[in-house]
Image (cartoon, rainbow, N blue to C red; front, side, top):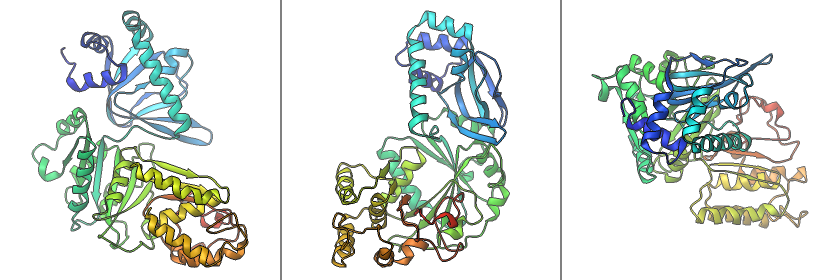
Length: 452
């Protein structure tokens, strides 16, 4: 099977299922390979063409443009079809698709597609099933993209040893049978050319590329081929913008921007972090995560997040139901299901904060609950065994329970979005630390607050 290497073979098996090697080879021969450079468009919104593409390598981005601006719909990774709706319906393209790094696609026009289906009808079923799953994903899991293949890891402090954390990450990947290989400039000094970076596409797992300010050319190449950028920093270091961030122009505005996660590292048994907002003030990032050295829960959570396998839990309101959530989450934990993102409203928000604050230590959670009961915080709300926010008079008691540091100045180690209905709960000043999205100014937190 000339030119049909093992990697492409594996991709087609995942997309089309149990086809014979001969049929997969025929699919590849009928299609036309097309290479795209970074920033090059595969097609434009509104274009009329009945062509299907399958991504062989690289990463594409779908965007929708209108009078209000450009909306990023999501990223498309290797092994995924692109443009199937225009092929099936004959309608103009609903969005534009461009390469956010060097990519290769396989192109089929309508005649070629029908020829393949005539020879193997199951191909149509496989492709239809993929489209249905993508629609379901877009409906119920908004903005979920293909997991990153190449991850650029930037150490903001050159003298900060990341090995204790990276060793734990490699252990997680190995235990979960996720292939991973790690590269830095020293390991590839003689081969750090385009051939090396192109070869990364042939690997079935994750490629982690260490970047540093001492090797700017290598770091720039890593950024070109990266799907995700992780900034690793000692949380106690100076939160300034570092030279490598400027050199790589990480925060420039472009539709080609990669997602950026800020990984804030703490020593073992570090106290609850404070003033996280100092790190967020001048950085345009997508997510920030706290990880303590040797904390298995933190490492597992981080690894699930970067591989798009994180578990989120949303807790609704409803008075006494809030207390029942503790038992539900405990049962999930006992089944080995750890929570990575937590959200809630009203009673669900209060108990969500409690679990996040205690980092799912249920002995500590029970202790907090008992303190609340003994303090008679529920004296006027018999249905709610912990705290009721039905009366604003109890805000001071709740702040004592979790501490002012928890409410305003701390970012829990688990990303948590909580929305208790409590109008007067707001900072004294918009300059106070908070942990929400930058698109939600503190002044809007009269009814909501977000705790990350």
